Image (tube, rainbow, N blue to C red; front, top):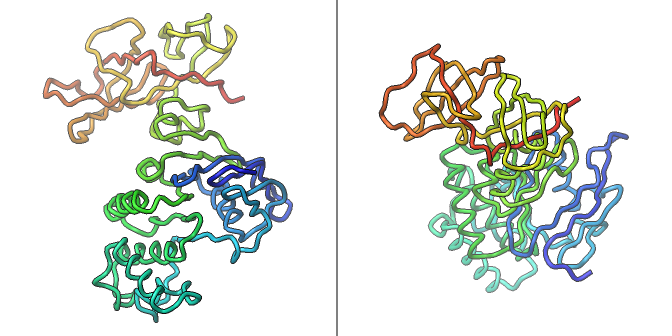
Length: 352
């Protein structure tokens, strides 16, 4: 076993006879950040607990830099952990919190390492403050510094920004990326926030009902989702019913015939779901080939874009995002045409 980084292979786990992890497998390359992403109850925190050693999976392998950790005690795994509530000691100063796991080091080395961590997280002036006097963002940085101070082989983060407001989360996400660029530690982060995952991680592991749905870069998963679940969970996706009518053609439930510029992997007559991102639906004042007839409901200004809410002829609600060019806008109830970018349509089987 010579692989570097973190390896999760065929992991199963159950609580009280209920299986919560099903054959979970993914790799975290050495020095990279991977985010476990999915809805509440999908199993992402359970797999993080298994990596940390807080639970022992029923089956499977957990290895770090080629060493099998599956049944190694927590204290011997050499991992750093950052919890959502930070778990700082309120009666200790910032410096003492960071030094908590360094009692085995000589005093001079311990002091030097704490100094280095304070500089890394930009909290040197706060060394003698107590956690309750710090902001939420500062407390989060103390928690990261404490986890990194022990020089762990990997860092595990469980919803590290979940307790912070949106503006502060964005600031701390950028801070984490900066620190990661400096330290380069193998990191696994659990989050339910897709924007957070895309902002911080180089690779996403999308989970659903205890299974891995897809592993890939944020761009791959957004542009090339492997399932209808992933397509709908990562970003917004309009979902429109259709029927396959030929090797590269569809009839939408709203009546429009659409020619696809690639082979459709479903037999003619199959009921399918066609998806389109809002930014891939273009507003047209006139009918064009493949255009969908719709009723204009409203438009919301989002910076330089307009987000348009519309309803197709079959009653399907859709969103389109277009540039705000200052021209005349349709009025509520007007008939409009929405032209999808054919190359960016995705086709999935209709759930039975």
